[in-house]
Image 1 (cartoon, rainbow, N blue to C red):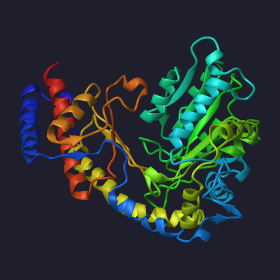
Image 2 (image 1 turned 90 degrees about the vertical axis):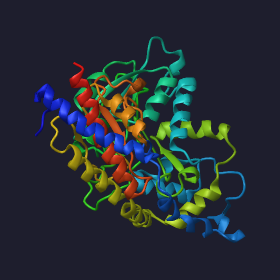
Image 3 (image 1 turned 90 degrees about the horizontal axis):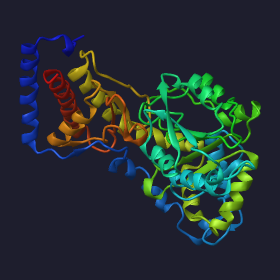
Length: 425
């Protein structure tokens, strides 16, 4: 392993000159590449185009006696409930199917709890003191933004190889002001971690002091395997019920990265008391969701196996891009002692750790060279990474040739940022 910290100043200056020359060569190319967000490629979107033709005649829009073109069924068509229940490992009665955005359903759920309360508790807006929300780090910036907007104090908990640090969580939930936590349990954003069965069981068995504590279980990447040997995620709801916590978990998911992100179908699943209360609020909120879109998705995917078969086509497109990034990082930084990265088996992201104190500079240099990355710090609450070391890579949208260039420039940038820091100390 090569440790920049142990190099002499002349050696650091020589290495800096080499990397700087490479960097200037990249700048001359005028690149305009973006690996900032997890966006499906055009080729991935093309995979689902036949969905638009599955309902062509009037009769196609009749589902189990319901005309999906009209009002009604505020919590979704029965076929969609059955479809999502099979994926989540819950009963269809616990599922509410909505519009295209699971993030929107999470936001609405938090607003409802803040204004009306949940589980017979006072609404959050009437509870005294500063309320807290657990955030797994590195994590998803949009989750953190929702909690921030609700006025929570965000409490970071580290992600381990097995999932979040449950020891820390078990201590935190003894505080009645801790009201919930975010989880992306499979192929998590951005580390790609899948929670082990033991982690899921311990989370399902939490004994929080707050009766209105809820785990927001975001199954964003539940069928997004890149390889066939991915670890299966244990369904959490049966474990929560067995532990005496039937209403502690609220699950969310959508078809956004399975079909069309802007025109998918989202859902939530909750315990018996919670789902009853949520359904009552939604009945005031809307006369009916887009049931035609639900029906198109069900007719196209058919069932869980049909969905898995479809996702294998996505994997064929995504896998080479992930492998390209990892191969380039191995070549550029594999021998550097201060750099590490994840090797995900699914999902949409690679998590990279650079020399502490240099992530922002690395992102800045990459942008100067023509590659846009997620802003450093975004994977922590309030966009503040205390070590300034984590960077999220999203390789799905560009082509392999573009990804190769972007990863090479990233490797050069992280080395330049580290050399700058050491030369200026």
